[in-house]
Amino acid sequence: MNLDRLVAGLDIGSAKTTAVIAEVVGDLKHPTVNILGVGQARTTGLRKGVVADIEETQRSILKAMQDAERMAGAQVETVYAGIAGEHVQAMTSTGIASVTGAEITRGDVDRANAVARAQAIPQDRELIHAIPQEYTVDKNLGIRDPVGMIGTRLETEMYLVTIGASPAMNLRKAVERAGYKVGELVLEPLASALSVLTDDEKELGVALVEMGAGTTDVAVFHEGKIRHLGTIGYGGLNVTSDLVHGLGVTQADAERLKEAYGAAFEPLVPHDERIPLPSTGAQGDREIPRSLLAHIIHQRTQEIFELVSREVERAGFLSRLAAGVVVTGGAAAQPGTADLASEVFGTGARIGMPGADLGGLADSVADTRFATVTGLVQYGARRVATGAAAGKGRRLAMQSAPSMDTIAVRFKTWLQDFF
Image (cartoon, rainbow, N blue to C red):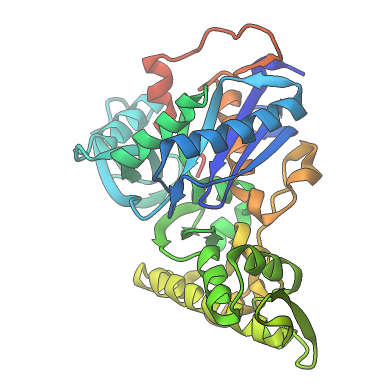
């Protein structure tokens, strides 16, 4: 195990906090990660992806991280933490630079990017990603990499992603109180995209729908780049809540029923199949048709997909999803989720499972609920591979290495193009 090449991902969800520790292997262009440790804890301090109780969140982080460290046999000091929620905003910015020599150099591109990046960000917002989308040389549009081309005017179009300063500060505070440092905050749907989408899907046009417990995030990719981000304020907890009210069971029993017998697409369930409900003192033993359970799940999941579909249509991309829809996240594990998504969006759909570029204990994260956290360690792996960050690891009971945190590294951070 190379301690300098350890990365840790931390996904603090509304229902579960998940930590993964991995080792970066492979080359600069295609770094892969070996999963070494996985930890999970119940989250009690978050509401719709935003920290509502720092102490409770800190407790969840500590348990998940310690479990992952025990499994990995090493400690980490820095984590790549996911962030999402309705406070996320994105906009496109343009930067123009005059070309100083005969050919466009990397320095010219950096200057154009710096102009696009230098947008005034309100005090209550924080910029976390600045992603170059495409370049224009003189009047030639849609250029991916202008270095080496001839021209006098270079224009860049950049996608700027900002988050609420307050949610970001509270998330960092909870992580720091648990004894760790946040290397970077990474937008969760972008991390999940690294984990479950193929390059071909991003090129052709795809909507990634990440169904969490508190919210559902959508990221639209087209021609290889992120084009739209959105958040719907409903998720798996809303499905559970519907079961609680519809079936007259506790939340814990609703979760168990959903896991054992649930289906997101009602036609998949035989109408004559019956399932037991937990008995109560007043009602005794009860049975219901399994199709009733599926009906409740189907209705709420369909509503969530319809809201996502309207969001994608408003952005102008519903008819440009040649690669269809990829559904992931903890709430996507229900049988029939892809069938329902295909019906609502009117295109092909599949379930997004992490697995590509993963080694080591990869089978322990082969589940939709690990899409974000595996994406976070893959993001960290690219950072380590490009030298924009150092791995932060030590064997249990050993001293930590000094941290690497310079202005040059921070400058490099937003120019890296991972999405």
